[in-house]
Image 1 (tube, rainbow, N blue to C red):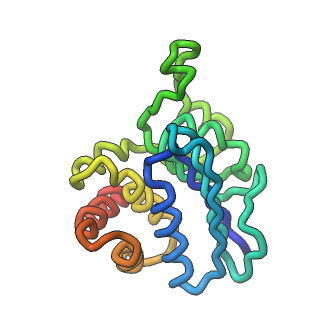
Image 2 (cartoon, helix red, strand yellow):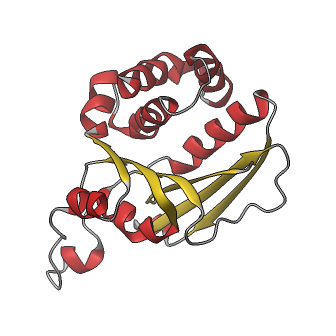
Length: 188
């Protein structure tokens, strides 16, 4: 059976490294894996979406609405924006950080309130945490992506050591220790 994970965020947050790490790990675990990156206006802080599909045999990298088992979101509004892609009862792993989109920055709109509660009311399993604080505790605000991967790892039956090996394979040597710490903080 194919599993579908969407990684959603804002340009520059490291979602591509997160998808590379997840794809590497799943290949090492013997799955057929398809990863597809869909870039929005990533260089301008726009949405960036990555699909990661894995299973015995995966034919397409694309996830349609209502098919995602898990959405990993770098920001609350991005989680809400892509919630329609989750299957009923699906899971959202979300950073509680708020990054104002352009309409909020310009004052044309307000940042929506109670997004986590609204997602839960739709019947989704929401695992929300302040990943930015944990990333800073690990040594860099840029490690939010690895904190999120640590949190996601709780929902896989893959030993922590294998996730750590994937970090070693995907991250430059000088950042391995910081990222492994961020991963463990996210895992909790």
